[in-house]
Image 1 (cartoon, rainbow, N blue to C red):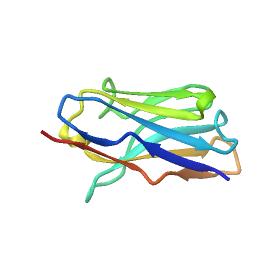
Image 2: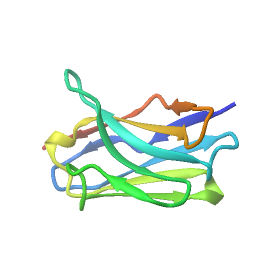
Image 3: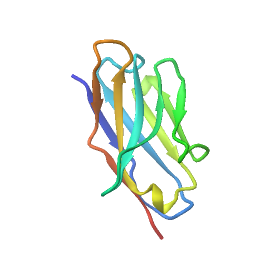
Length: 118
């Protein structure tokens, strides 16, 4: 059974940094694309970043240059290092994993809240 568990959110001042972690159990690490999206109250979901099983990385324009996604296969963990945080980065951050080949499957976690405020 696949489980996706995020951690690392919190309150940070503008300009600060946070590192989110996503631990994925089940035998999908290394064969699924894993990424992060975020959603703030009253706003649409936004793609943030993802990393494929082959190591290709994509960032949304809104975070490019400020956020870094990385994976540690030994720990079944994907990280999202966030720097130069802005108040508009405030949102619930959710980790997901989706298959790259049929059958199409997707999993996501409960999310971790990031609040950027002075």
